[in-house]
Image (cartoon, rainbow, N blue to C red):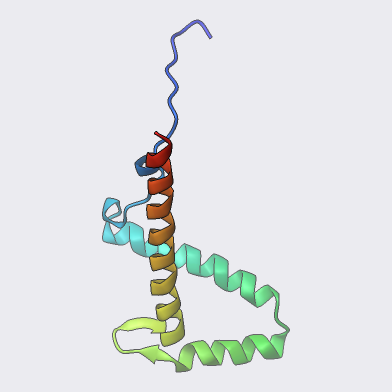
Length: 98
């Protein structure tokens, strides 16, 4: 390669995404894209009648200013908590090896 190169192992803090690193606009764009990907994956598994019924459930179960059904919001909060717990466990195991 004709040049020096330094390589190091990524530490846990290098791998973790922080919500604060995104602007509000970036966060909304990322959330919309992820919702599109997940929604498309779910829809592909359904026939037309099931998709129509599913869309009705999504539209009917909305909460105030948060434009998401209750079950989705609660699932996202639970998933975020599980992710944080997994990350902290990973950090603990990483620190124990060091």
